[in-house]
Image (cartoon, rainbow, N blue to C red; front, side, top):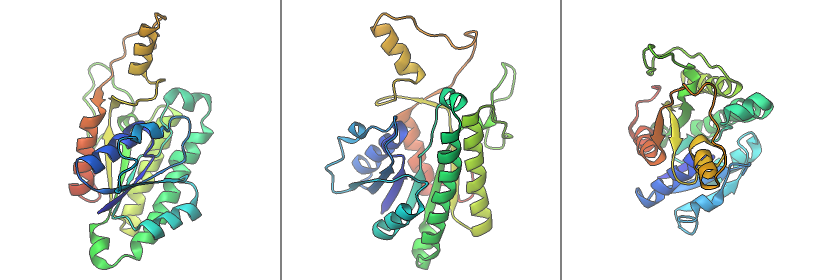
Length: 247
């Protein structure tokens, strides 16, 4: 089996790749355009493995994507390529529209063209796994019912709106073209190799350097946290055994 992981030099993507290779012995093709948050050092454990290969490709580049599909012949795609900072999306939203919406559209189209040409058995076994976020559902007040897979989309930032848009595209490609898609939603992740602007590593670095620790809003926000390797366990289970078309 061979899995194409987009955004594989990112925090969650690199954890997925390490798990697939070290725990599952699965071939992985990592495509990443190496923006500010991409870090190939997070893949040092596996970058000499015969099961690993890296291609510097932007998911908005249809020609390069097509070449990767033709040469690598993956059995599944796990899409983790995304701009993911709420604060950065507020300061400048254009990159979020380009990567999260246009990039997902381009990846879906190139995946579809590749998938439609597969022989019947490989076509039936193929999966496109979209990694989404709980932020597409908005935010909760203290007495609200927790979100589940049936919750209404209610994004409240350019970032979450762009991720909601990409989810809608994924569902539409599944419904219209029959592409075997699955979507999963996660809460905030933490763990090894996380980009230092994120809350937990930011607070740790501030504390270590005896600098003031920032408090967001009025300090009353509640956030749900998921250890990245626990998330990866779930992602691989979903990618390999999840029901097509479900979230």
